[in-house]
Image 1 (cartoon, rainbow, N blue to C red):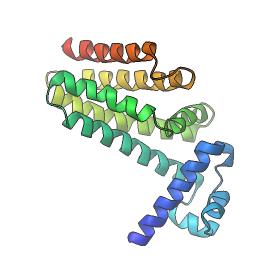
Image 2: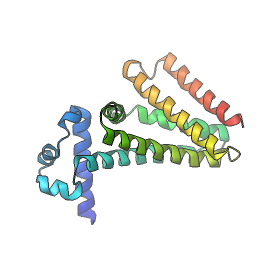
Image 3: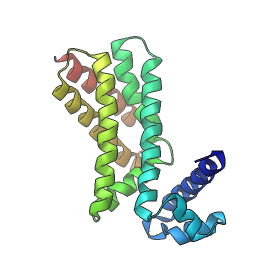
Length: 193
């Protein structure tokens, strides 16, 4: 795909993501997305044949942003504890963005749709694989299984915090203390081996 094709693809992704975040999965209809950006339904299907394909592309892009942010945060720190803290801090930074609604939405959708459940599993597996790779650099003595487990625990903690941020102020003293405790848990999990 050329530059124009890449730009059109990105335009479709941004419009679809906006519709999904603002109106929910019921409004996530290819024909409506095409109309919103002023292209034909057939033109949209040139880039994304199905709603499923478009949903996968949205979440692939989101997990890539998430993992890139994590990797940049880790690379900017030189100590082991700093790198571990950067994992949590980068995740928290993402949780404070509007796109977090997409992740909460896909969890809800996955509960009722096997295809969406498969998308969520794929994206979670990707995040965990990238995190496990980073953990190998941070704590090389951890076994591969332990790295995978720590990655799953980190993801589960961040997922839980994303839900809490719906009804609790992320900047409150209690939430700040919880974030500090999350780092302590990661330090303890990694330092245990």
